[in-house]
Length: 234
Image (cartoon, rainbow, N blue to C red; front, side, top):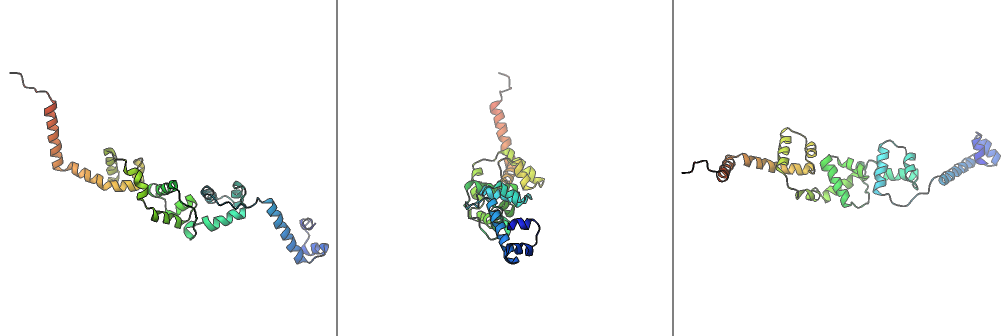
């Protein structure tokens, strides 16, 4: 009855007179009833912790301009209020907050974070948004694990002369490192940087007079051994 009277456009004094209650008490009761109705319509709040995938999707949708209602519709069992609270408390502007995600980094996440930092050139803040973590979490990851742990897989792969030549040529043209890495499949920016000085040393050695003389001598020796004699038989 209270809700019906309010929907008819009656003001609070009129409704209160009909209900034989004060206007203040009537209005308070109405707000309470409306809150209870909204709770019944909304899905029950879940106490299950947010997964990394959920965090990433929430950040992606919010950055894309999705409304809270739209985001909540994608997460059955999570209310608009719950998602808003989680976002503002743990995800929004992670580089401005001192909060921690509390989730342990997996090996795959560590490698991917390193790739985004070295190969793609993302900032800590951008990586934090990608993983749904805080700036401090990303910064701490690189402080604890550092770059070398993610570079091990590439160390066993020997550099080919063609790769060295391309590396030297690109850097001679002042091509940015992230473009250089893209031109060298399987090589990160850090790996290319590390290889450059060694490639320069190899080029210097190969172009030195001693190296040229040695190469020429070896070539003549091969010609003498491998070529038939042109002198006529006695």
